[in-house]
Image 1 (cartoon, rainbow, N blue to C red):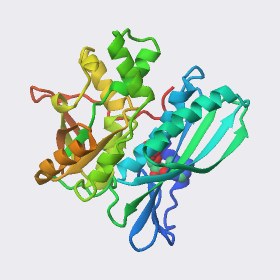
Image 2 (image 1 turned 180 degrees about the horizontal axis):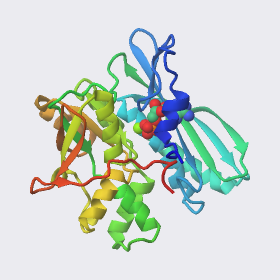
Image 3 (image 1 turned 45 degrees about the vertical axis):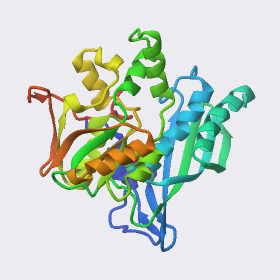
Image 4 (image 1 turned 120 degrees about the vertical axis):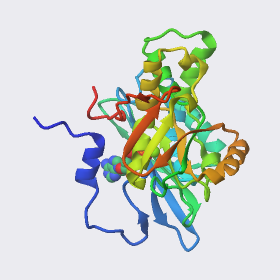
Length: 328
Ligand code: ADP
Ligand code: MG
């Protein structure tokens, strides 16, 4: 039996069309966090789509207001990864029945985040779906021409940086599944991180012209860093001690912490590369954006990812992102 195809195998096999070349006005197609569309001499439109499916990405019992927030947040996070300014979004909803209480709450969460970024609902589609709720959002933002942050563009010796903290998305999910008990404050923080991720829009915009490459960490640090490494043709070294983690996460066994950070997903922080000389500029951009940033390692020529613990020993990381078609 051949290995079952993973999400990225399917994209390569069926969606990327070899030899098709760039189409007029499509400056960058499949393969990055957003596509870039020609928006005139000074502008490019960054466009992204993400879908959330009941039973796969959320349980039927989830708070609809939190779901509304998250459905838009995961899209705005892709705009942030490109350094784009959100402008508008389209909402396609599939629902087994018209539950207006549910809808009112869902849209309250969604609009609260949209309004915070002055991002307007510009259209969509509404349909019955037998299998459960599906939410698909397409978000558009703009960026000055040539200034978008891409997964490619990093160079050897660049530092690797990450915003916020990593691993709490997976911690929140494990807590929701009843795998842990957490004290009150830690529990609400982990749930907030899982259900109310904050897209790092201001930081992404602040990193234009400074970061050489960027991605949002949606599938775990190993997989998403892997995308930057492949796109930029580089290898990386990460220092485990430098990876920012919550106090609650640090109380778990190290192996669990590393699983959550490297393959957990749902963190929606920015991972980016920049030359060493840009450190002060990055600290100022982060301060202005109200987000913490940490330097977690560096890039080098070659292939692959090495993670070193505090004694300089290599940590064994299964460098595989959460993959919708390979995992149960
Ligand atoms: P992200 O995690 O940033 O949303 P992914 O890693 O899921 O991005 O997707 C990688 C690339 O493949 C993106 O450029 C995305 O637009 C593209 N892609 C994924 N699914 C499809 C599809 N069904 N048709 C065309 N492109 C797709
Ligand atoms: Mg992304």
